[in-house]
Image (cartoon, rainbow, N blue to C red; front, side):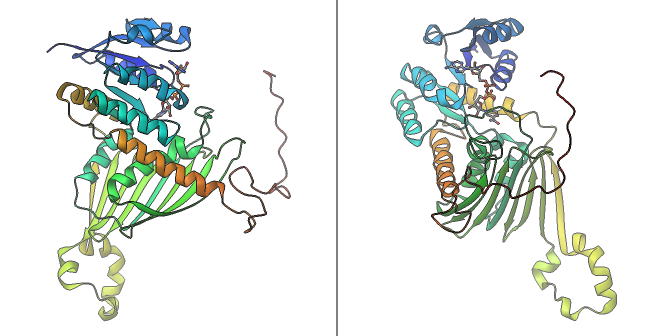
Length: 366
Ligand code: NAD
């Protein structure tokens, strides 16, 4: 099989991992890495034994496919250059800055008839893959994505940085348009929202509560789904899926606690999980990392011409829903009135301290 000639555009925090993985795949030739920062391009190229570029133009015509991992503001410019030349593109999430930009890329990919994939990586998390194979019709969902502040992706807020992962997962899992969106959130360090909670009501009756925060000390990324078929819980960090369903006994006869005698009631707590509710724990941790799966999937789509699991429309739909969350967030009335403070940057100023301020040691570096 001829090796696929690939390049990574943008080799910062995440792009260098795209490049490292591609450089290690036997059916890929990493022909180069490009970065607006020439030193960064040189450092990563030297590490991986490939050619550095500080401009993408020379790569057009030398590659069969590219991975675009620049900051979101540059996704459209970079991806459109390659799509116009008929080169398949994998672009990181969020697909673009605006839905109009995303629509443009979708049209360019359709015109060139080449695969266009968006990097919603959690779709390749083994725990989510396993859940997607199960016949579940979600009715209530709780999604949480919390992490500490890293100072990265500050050109966007927590909705486009973090929540968009879960918005894409919800659209894929629920399979119904969203009817209503309400949201509340606050900017703690200024600029964009650092934490946000949204309530989504889908046309099929499903309701989802989605929370994202990039100022939480302890990381947490989980999804919990309640459905007529049972309960599913995913921990995206450990890649574990927990499924709970009624036992045969409960399905056939129900459980009427009002008719249980005192002894049976005393045993109930110990017997709920096991006798009445069955639990299956599935561990996806040994199935390899999801970035490698995502890249291999893209390569397979390039070779076969198949439509990617997360295509341009999926990226666009997640972005459109994210924009609806942002609109709801910006309109949130902190004092319950349109004339009072609104939105993530309008949180009323603190009236006092929750506790006596601590004296910090002087910063030696300052
Ligand atoms: P980063 O700032 O660490 O890296 C971006 C790199 O792109 C930098 O080295 C920069 O010099 C370079 N660059 C900027 N403009 C360029 C251009 N026009 N052409 C070539 N190179 C250019 O950012 P990051 O954290 O790696 O994020 C990059 C993208 O990946 C963003 O879209 C972000 O949302 C996405 N991301 C996705 C995930 C995920 O879980 N899927 C996680 C982190 C970041």
